[in-house]
Length: 127
Image (cartoon, rainbow, N blue to C red; front, side):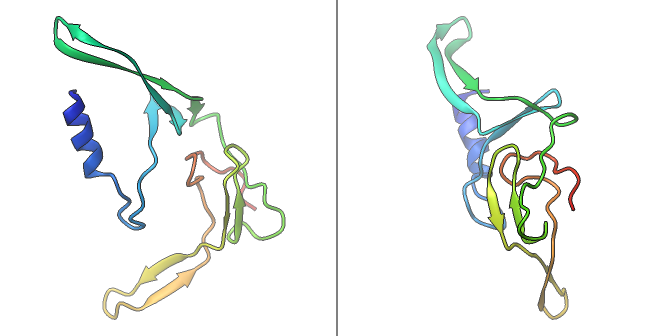
């Protein structure tokens, strides 16, 4: 893949479809997950294949099957407060919004997170 191809690929999915916010980058390799990787340029040069760029990626690899998170929040119900035991993000007061296809009317419902929206790990034993 060329740098131009990678940049174009990332531009196509740069912003979230619902929030419009820039997406965070993570990696999944052979069933392991790396949230919030750190990138660096290890080397550049001209080789047999032409101009080359070697990116270095650093970060902690988590295993989807083994690594899980739990909600550390104790003050409120799981649908009202979430503190991730792995990455520490704290969230308050989210709802699931449903829209009636015919009228467009919105209804709001309690929602318990199944995965951390920041690090992506599965949340075990929701209360």
